[in-house]
Structures are given as structure tokens and as C-alpha cells.
Length: 190
View (cartoon, rainbow, N blue to C red):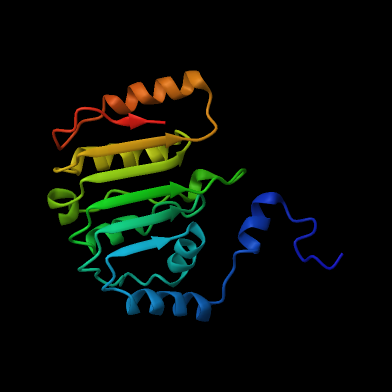
């Protein structure tokens, strides 16, 4: 067979097919720096993965960004999210969609909690949506952090994907008990 992924386990296939060169990763980061004055930014999980490869600790500041849609890679997880939050002081809407990937170990999960609460959470973020959540520990920790530290939050939606009804009910109950930094009375679930 001509396919170089033949006989490679499924988990490795996903990573193998997603191996941009350092040059390609650096060009993606350059493009991100070039659009730093945008008000709306949507990044797929694939682009987020490429940006993680080029990340050198120096993400640009997005002074005008009010809406961020970010795909969350199941393998590298939430690594860039704290940096985007810290560098988007006027962010109002945060949409996070976790990529569904089977067979990937969670041992690569990057701890989410930033040292200081980003100013956007304290002053501006009014809406957060978390889409395709499965109830993994990493997701719950991010939800807990965002609910606790978002001071002006008006809406928080969690959309579960492919989980048993009993598990979904349990997770809803757990999440509903998380402390809130805002006057948000109810987390919405789908």
C-alpha cells in the first residue's frame, strides 16, 4: 500500500496526518499576528493544533476581539485558551467546541487555570458556549474555572455529545453546583 499510515494504530494516524512542518506552523502564527485587530475570530481545532506547534509563549494581543470561536483539540487540549483569554481584553463571547477523537490518552492534558484571572472574564465575557462536551475531567475543570471567574456572565451553555442520559443528568447536576462569579442563575444544557 502507498498509504504511509498503514499498520499505524488509530491514535497515531490522527497525529501523523496532522504534522505540519515548523515553517507551516510559523506561517500560521504570522497570519494570526497579522489579523490581531479583528473583532471576530474563528479557529478550527486543526488550526489551534498548528498554532500550538508554533507557540513560543508570545501570542499577539487582540485589542478589538469580542467573539472567539475556538476548536479544542482532544490531544493537546486547552493549552492556548488561557493565552487567548489573557490577550483578548475586550472579549464578550467565547464559543469552545471540543473535537471528538477516539482513542487518545488524556495524559497530554495541559492544566488550564491561568495564574491571574484574565481581565476579559472579570469585565466583559457575557456569553460562553461549550459544544460537544463529553464530561471528561478536563472539560469539567474548564467549566468550573469559567463559571467561577466570569463576573458579568449572562449565559452559559453546555452542549453534550454522545453521552448516556443518566451520565448527562449527573453531569448537569454537578455543573449546576459549581460556584459562580456572576449573578447567572442557571446553566443551560443541550
